[in-house]
Length: 306
Image 1 (cartoon, rainbow, N blue to C red):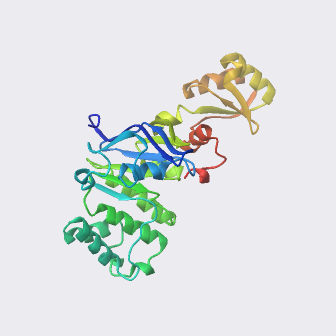
Image 2 (image 1 turned 45 degrees about the horizontal axis):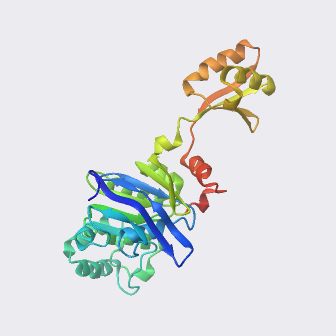
Image 3 (image 1 turned 45 degrees about the vertical axis):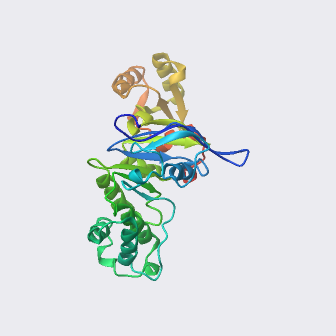
């Protein structure tokens, strides 16, 4: 059984294709009930393969997983899971509402849940339009609506903001946050680090199939640093290094970046001024989730985080 309070648990979950391609490598993942969990990783890191194993669509090579207390693909747990993995596919000549009607009949759900699902994703007024006329963003939202038909305990979403304009992305973030409130759990796979930072309670970072970091967003970001803009820069650096140690001071773009508690800012400013150094700026710099991601994975930019 899953650990108490966990919606998803994996233990050394591994998927190897052929003899040498390890897509997922001894993954130990724990998603708590009632949280929005962000799942991040570069292209080819193993995120989608992991989601497919959790849904029973792909068989693991070794290791175990429990989803809502059951093995992946177990009918009892699948009845309580809603998922959108990769780009959703629908009948192009049916309306959005009729597509959901087909899905509702297939999963044995009453049709009176269709309009609430459409309304939740902002498609109620377009539910009668044919799917082929939908924009990419509308197709993504219909995919989320389909995942909501079962009123699931666990919602698994793979890149739900693909194709959305900025306003649509903001609406989707609000929706995900709402869907993750109460007892429902949301597992969100996304390459948009800012989105995950705004929406998720905890984050797992996967690289080369292995989980390399996991924790609350604020834990992963850490305490941040202090930026100091002062002249002469060399004298300011020497003074601060005497206070903090050389390993805590870095010169970046003509400023000093100090690895120090933000509460030290006023003390550092006072010491520099007393030393006759002109200080024009002292402020806290918060690390973003993107900063952490790039440090952990060595990627050149956030667009690689898929």
